[in-house]
Image (tube, rainbow, N blue to C red):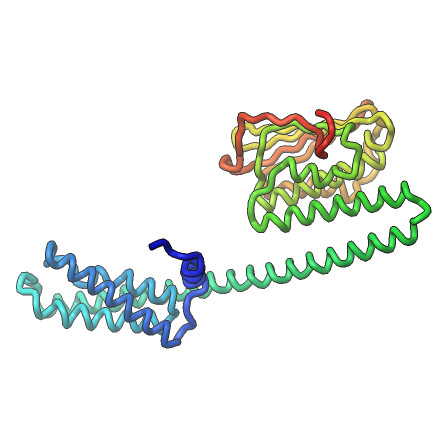
Length: 340
């Protein structure tokens, strides 16, 4: 009989959140753990009667503490010691230990299990605290995303009303706002999962003329944290290209190519056909962002201000498993519907 999704979900919640410490459910769970350990010990007694008496109770103590908390671990410790001693010690003639050795074994079991309870309880508290923090942040992020979408809709309505006689300016502003929202939505929708590099570029470059932008590279999925940093870098590059670079003039073009070399992702951003660019006299936010954004990923961003246009080389380290379909080479405009 297949297990339904609700049962699986309840099991996952039990492993993640556990039972309320000190509750009847937690105590009952500890008793069940000891009963299971006793069953396994009885099963092994048919084959190995000389097996260490308390061997199967250590996992029971550990599991009871992780799921039920300190009190459940204590119950499993005491109950396991009593069951192991009363059930096996007097009844196994093959056990040739003296009473002193048996007592020493029981004391060692108590000390070892006490350490297991302490360590498991400490681990359980840390994990639960992290889970609660993650859950809280997820709720806050979802609420902020909801409010941001509402505010963005309000901004769109205001722009349409105030710029109703300036169609070109209105469409450009709204297009850029939509691109920013699309990038934010892409990262939020990933929910901790890897994001396709092409989708990041598409979200950032969607407002611009697709016939003047070409991308090529392997299908690569980037983990959320470096994906967020890359989105910031791409947004800064696209904004500067629209203000001062290739996308500021009618004939300019932008070419983006990337590839994996070992565990290094290398991206080439190349502009041509636009106004002549020169190195800025002072470091603005974009320059500081380039220098700092990819540091946690052993990455770097190098810019070269050539007469033909800006050239930017991006490199960062990624885990090898994020490479998807490395043999499938892409070559297409960022926005759908254009030519390659």
